Image 1 (cartoon, rainbow, N blue to C red):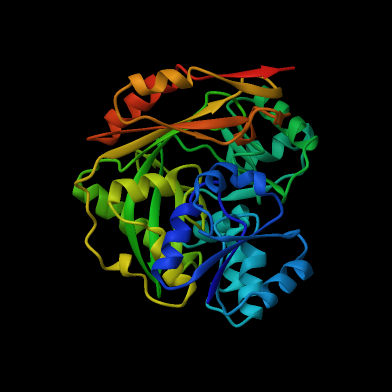
Image 2: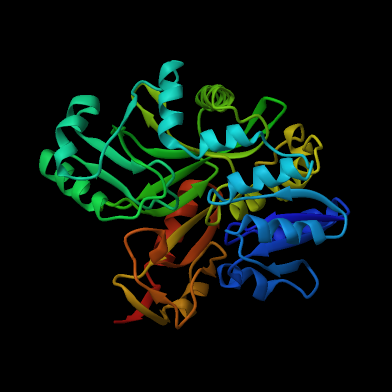
Length: 405
């Protein structure tokens, strides 16, 4: 019997293949670009999973591949880009899966913000805007300054602008007019406070908070993610409050099963939503969850894809293991990646430091202002997330991408 993955996040295939085997199934990855999974595929043993090359943007071609798989028992997806096609195809094949209408809602950040605002779960609303400086007055009137501009269907921190004043707002709107957006541009109020994400698992409408991940972003106007640590140590009352809040948010948004990666800002008045991703967290979030919780969390993903209640919903969470943190290493300019300086120095740092490349020498890198400019990730561990973050940062300072223009 086969569990198919319609594309995936860059990391996690090894854990996914092991989890599928644990449920008595084989994992089959459908992908349009194997290079995305270069690191995972290079480190997996032969036969750990099957890879089928297909244009995954072509629904008809994808459907034909799925129909030909032996004993297709489940279809899963861990990306935002293919979440709607995966939900549609699962329903078409009669497989367990989320309501496609709910998935479509969560792929529209504007609709989610407006829905939660109407239901009292978000203090501010949002407004759709036409890209271009002429929309500045509308943004000021609707959400004020500072403001955040977003692509309603954006991914990987692409096409996100923070405007603190009139000049920055007009500049961001002008830049937005020159970008190819995946959805529609909208504006919402800027949230003041530290950024986190709630890593959750839901089943039949109940949600469990597996832990809170800290998140560090750049100081640039075009925000990109720089580092993260898990699990954040919170007072029990605050942890319980976040768990109830995120359960209410996910229920209102129609997310009733599976993992969710819910980004929020902890403001002076409590948590405020940034966005909902109906998947396990990207980069090395899945890896640090497995390591920090002492279990393969991807087993829950397979069980859910098969229509079974994930055992992780009820199992005690082991927080006795080390915490983990990671830092993304960006190229400092566009060009062609030649390699890295400093990788041989990582072993000298405390924290069992590890290197996870996201690019390979020879790769062209036309963009460095968002996650497309990431060349690799440094991972470190420590007794607490704070110490792990310090260790990861110190080691990451030694890694320098070499880029030729």
